[in-house]
Amino acid sequence: MDRRTVVVIFEGFQLLDLAGPADVFATANLLTRADGYDLEVAAVRAGQVSAQNGIVALARTPLAGLTGPIDTLLVVGGLTLSACPADRELVAEIARLAPHCRRITSVCNGAFLLAAAGLLTGRRATTHWLAADRLAAGYPQVRVDADAIYVKDANVWTSAGVTAGIDLALALVAEDHGHELARQVARGLVVYLQRPGGQSQFSTPMRASTPPSERFRELQAFIDDNPTGDLSVPALARRSAMSERHFSRLFTAQTGMSPGRYVERSRAEAARRRLEVTADPLDRIARESGLGGPETLYRIFRRHWRISPGDYRRRFHAEEL
Image (cartoon, rainbow, N blue to C red; front, side):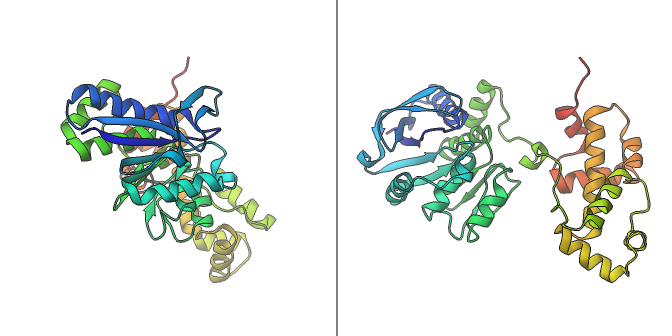
């Protein structure tokens, strides 16, 4: 029997959240004759549903008309979803269908709809890196992993932003049919079967809270502008005319991280920018970013972005036109 797969969409949804997984499943269907995927697109009301980019999809089935059993329920995301109250009817229908599904999944900030339906309570989950803090703040009972490309917790799967829906769908195919079929699908779609690293490699610079105190805002700017300087706690405390203990306590309270952690992140960001825009060798980048040598640069990149500096440069270096 084909695996009944219901994709839930809504006005303003992200088209790639639907199209990416749908093409993975369709490609898998071409390569296997048994237990393929029978896709249904559903919305609160049947009919035309506009994606955020203006393209219209057709939801043939109203959610209220669906009954079980369902193999996989896939809830897509949308650019404004995490910032707006969830549609109560949409959430209620997702909650109603969940007990009849073998597997429940979301793409991008579709995780907010699963959370609102109570399906992520006590679970580990992920979402787009831009929305991870809001998911954690709005649903403290969810263990949010802001770096994961996708997360499986029992029968509930969540994925990171947008194209990560393809990674998620490939993982579902691998679970259903084995890694060889998933590998064939990935080759056909010219994507990674499992991309290296987490989603933090795609994020904007690692953030600290903006301090309310002008003194600490100026100190942050000084640290960012002087990666090779003496940025030890004693030196920064002297610059701030405070004892080391008092300085460390206030800096952490103002920025949300310790001085040492902020300095490491600032230097890592300096190295990341140089990897993107220069062809300098790694030892020079490490030295001029305040990281000492290539070994430290490698260790910090593996810790923060789960890839090597060389891999990062190959993906994100901007060649001059």
